[in-house]
Length: 207
Ligand code: 5GP
Image (cartoon, rainbow, N blue to C red; front, top):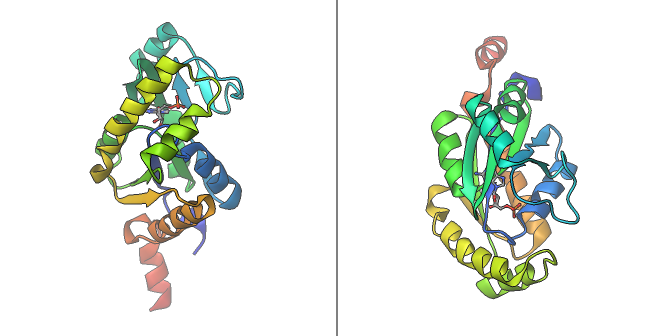
């Protein structure tokens, strides 16, 4: 059975900012075939090391609202006072073609996608090893000013409080181990019975 006999899935990965989610997602894309990363639209300011169109589509509030009016978002949310949204284009057509899509979004967006694509979503929550470690990681982010840092720490606690809404929780103690654990989840989820589009034909051939 080839990958294209399957419908793609939406692998939602959430975590508080600084738990290593971006690095994990990048490693997954590098190490696994048949998976793509959804690029979100945001009104947040671009950080130094970020590239428009690769990390995010950076835009302003007016243009974001226009996309919203045109019904182009699968979900959107206000996170730390900035707007973030997942484009339908980045997800729906890809899973229909059999490609899995990683979506790095917060708990608010996860709820919305779970409502819209309940059969396609797999929800993974990543925890930092400790709050102290999270502080270290956030403190190291050069672009964060003090006020922003405090805000992100309190948002992190709020984000963590939603872990029970997810299918899987992973503690990012060891980066490659966390990536391997998500791979296990992904490979198992690919085999789920409802994702085999041509299962009847396969069974007919076998028996
Ligand atoms: P950051 O600004 O650090 O890149 O992301 C801040 C938070 O916004 C993270 O928790 C991230 O998962 C979330 N986020 C990024 N893109 C989206 C999106 O398209 N929708 C939603 N709901 N959250 C997003």
